[in-house]
Image (cartoon, rainbow, N blue to C red; front, side):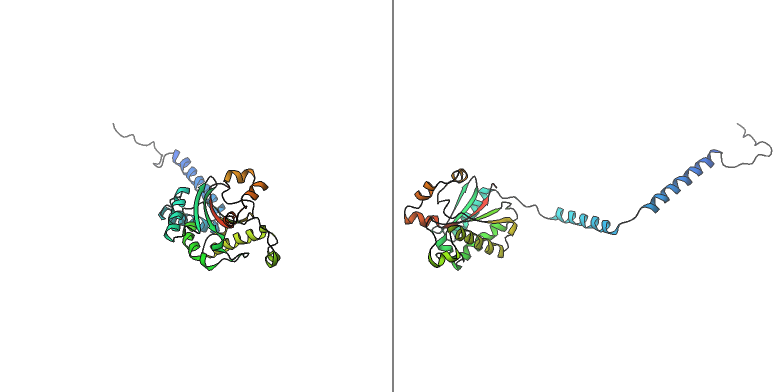
Length: 238
């Protein structure tokens, strides 16, 4: 088909719709320039974003921590006791309360005192790695226990009752563990005086130990000696 010649006097150029299109592009560009001019870049937020991204990248490269179970902790403590030949002075047990290390107070403290004896340091040092293990997520309770004989003489001046004595002994163990790197927020010191005789079950403790139970648990020197103890428990509850 032959090309039509333009009408006389008409000039060739862009089609009419292109003018509208150009106006639209100009308006859009003006709109985005306005948005950009209104936006403010907060250097603090940018720094926080960069730090967060770096933290996430570091965490993704860090090896995953395997969470320990009560059974694993019980096994590790038992191995330590056997390795150090501490069977006569320490034992480990398991209950719904958690995994408990029971330490004879004769090994840990001088009679009537709350200052740790040097003899116990190697044993505590050997279980510190179990306490600080990143896989051990259980809180740790250190409990002081006594027999039912009241404090007397010079001892009573500092410790008027067995409550003060048992609490001070528990606190001494906590302070030592903290000095070796155990987080303080993970630990608690509790004094029970004579209220929980040796061998009392977790269920009996929760229901309430009666005076009759306390007297029955202190009828002989052997029983009273067993009651004078410190317990370190990796708590499964509470």
